[in-house]
Amino acid sequence: MRIFCIGRNYAEHIAELQNERPAEPVIFSKPDSAILRENNAFYLPDFTQDVHHELEIVLKINKLGKNIPVQFADNYYEEIALGIDFTARDVQSKLKAKGLPWDIAKGFDSSAPISKFVPKSQFPEFPRLNFNLTINGETRQVGDTTMMLWSFGEIIAYLSKFFTLKIGDLIFTGTPAGVGPVHIGDRLMGTLEGQELLNFEVK
Image 1 (cartoon, rainbow, N blue to C red):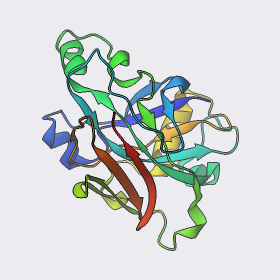
Image 2 (cartoon, rainbow, N blue to C red):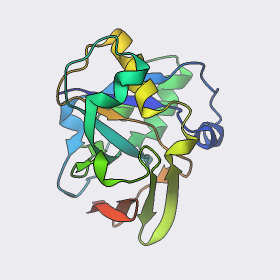
Image 3 (cartoon, helix red, strand yellow):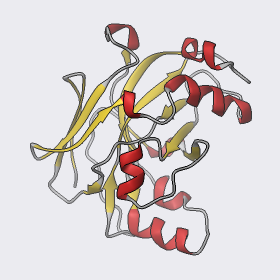
Image 4 (spheres, helix red, strand yellow):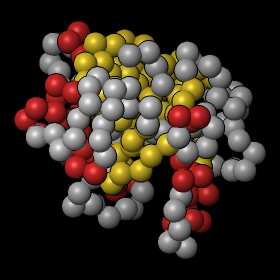
């Protein structure tokens, strides 16, 4: 199982980080050791002083695919989840300034909490989805998939040009605006179309 992540897929998030708007999807990955399941607590690592939350919708690939035409790409997943791409922002900024890869800022252990998966068929307006993140009861991120630069199908088609997608692979599809730091004692709750899927503590 591999974890593919899409960066800069919401225009307002691009603006808040003062990044350049890309012409193609920005791809990075996390190792499977980044997964944190069952709403287990997230422990802040000691090598960073600035861990940011990035709430995302996650797709789970359900069949083998390579060079998938975009019009068929939505047939390659049936379930979705909420996930958080935790980012060591201070580490990432230092590495980016030097033009170096930033794997350790994104792929450290437990940097990808993920909820249970639910069938996409249960959402009547799919692929339009609303999702949000609260911290200690305060709304921090609000997402609407109609604001994505690249749709779920376009993401899958693009990835499959370079990687053979396999059953069980996960795709984090990008985060909306509102990212920010987390602190010990914070309680993070993520909802998808009003359904609570994430609820865990930072320690």
